[in-house]
Length: 420
Image (cartoon, helix red, strand yellow):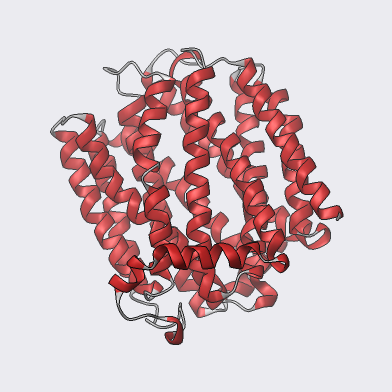
């Protein structure tokens, strides 16, 4: 199989192997932590969850990183990325343990969200650093393949972490706090794995490092504007278009996730345990779509080009999303989760490749942090729109049709750009 052959080639690079280990452990922990929070907020039997409550939780957890994200980029272009992975994962292990204690103490939701905020806040640094460091451990010729396999492997690890969380929650211990502690242990393992990477291997180059953090923070606006100008240059227009397209596809994915949560909680199951089990199956189907994207994208992007592959992914989602979503039934729902996993991850792999190919190393931290901000804002905006449009049981024909129209608009806009 081509994907196995490609993986064997990449694993010959020692730096890639070690960076991949950090990614798998870190994102696996993310999956455990996120499912634990979802189970506590959405599927607790004593809670009557609404789309508005889900949207509020997403806003509390994600919107602040529209502010933190740019600072993450500026600092990533100055700090050793390996040190970010080490101390970032140690801090997340500590804060996840605190979150578990707060769950046991049944504290007010706002206090729990503040603790979770700290965990996901550090995540902005780690994920942006992983993407920015990838070109430092593989050669240019294999960058597309690395972008296909590495982030997708991380997404699969997050999915597997989510699966582990479901197993712990439903089989081992009926306790969300226990699940969070499993995530804390995985964060600690990720920190230990980062110690196997040399400090200077992942960059940025010493000549690009400014020694004083305070100077870096106060100069954030100036540096961000430099990053935006770098991205807006005519030679990098394709990167700007790809980021815009990916943000809109992320909006669609976020809206469908809220719809999925509500359907699993109310419309398609009769108990919270059944709802959790169905959500786990849907996430597993989405993970299978991520894997399929990793297999297909190197070949498809190689033949069509990354930009045209984004067009294909958006167009396929525009057609298949309403076809599989409108029945509001379990079978089509699982098939739709696979399709959205395939198209979203396929477009993301192509976008990562375009950005890394057109953006210089000294700007990658800032650009990937802006990329992250676009993701967060789009996701929260999607949750807000879904909260306005969804009925209590999650069945909304207008929302499904609206998402299909957005996918179609992305496909047409990217196709026009690629034909210029």
